[in-house]
Length: 121
Image (tube, rainbow, N blue to C red; front, side, top):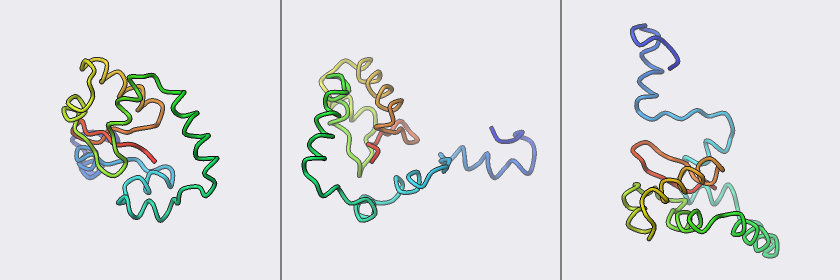
C-alpha cells in the first residue's frame, strides 16, 4: 500500500490500486495494454523465418505438457477468465492453476484483475 488508508493524500493512489492499476517501469508495460492491432504495428514479427522456427522449438521444449496446454488455450489479444481456461484445458483444476502460476512467474502470461489471464508478447 503506498500510503495510510486514512490519509487524504493516499486516497488517489489507493483508489487506483483498488481498480487494478498497473505499475509501469518499462516501455513494454505500456505496449501490453494497447489493442492487438496496435501492438502488431509496434512490434512486427521477425523477418527471418528460421529465427522464428528456432525460437518456437526452444520455447516448446522449455514448457511442461501442462504449461503448454494452458499456454495454448490463452490468447494475446483477449483475456480469458480462469473458468474458461478450466473448460478449454482437459486437466484437473489444481494442475491448471499450477501451470498458470508457473507461466506467470516465467513472464509468459500475466494475470489481470478478476482472475483473467492473457499471453504476454
